Image (cartoon, rainbow, N blue to C red; front, side):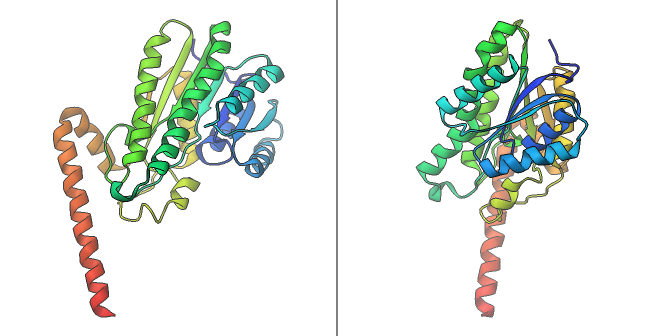
Length: 283
């Protein structure tokens, strides 16, 4: 059953200290939801709570913050336990905790790959495992999983990120079928580049890519809430014309899409090498 009114809804949001998680929490709180913010960043959580409270001081929903490492199963279990202890139920879980790092696969360490999978995918899995029994008992609930357009096509220099986001996509598709007619819904979100701290933090590792940011966290949050209301399975947000083109091409001709992406990457590498050579000759 779709959540058509967020007043009184209990929502758990991972990655809630910043970015899409914070924007979604703010939007939900303004509509009367009780918010449980989870993040590994304790000080960021306190700031996020104050920010949400000040944004809509007349909102009726409560705000609970719980420091949580989503890669830690016991911490996620404790997050959901504290939520049910405080509110008696869990209606919505938004898994927006995530990291994004780029780089050539030759230099991308196994530990970096494992960290990416642990946060972006296993963090989602842990949230489902910990909250699903409660939703089954209620016979209602909704999950929002943050994937990426990188979970729909392969992006050179983002092999690990793509792997983790494709994992979220496959997991959500299989789980959606498994939960058919249980009253529990799943919306998987596939945004293009969003103006979040992750983009700024990883600017150096992504500087060989043509990144054009055309989405804000508030835009994504607004679309997420509408998708939940509509019980929408797939929310793809790609205002970038080039990304929209590749997404469509991947549907129509995946081999051609991969070839075009490879050609574009090879050309960028070639141009980058030429620029370095020019700078070297001028010194």
